[in-house]
Image: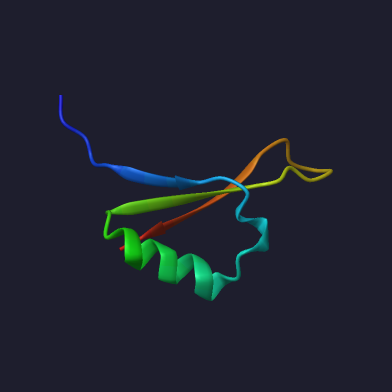
Length: 51
């Protein structure tokens, strides 16, 4: 079994879209996931960026 590495960034609520994109480029991985705090309507949230 082979899979792609992924970066996971907890506490990403304070990052702007531009900062998330820059971080995703910096990791040089195929995917980067940014974990966000839950909201009143969502128990969990995340954003994913692909290279």
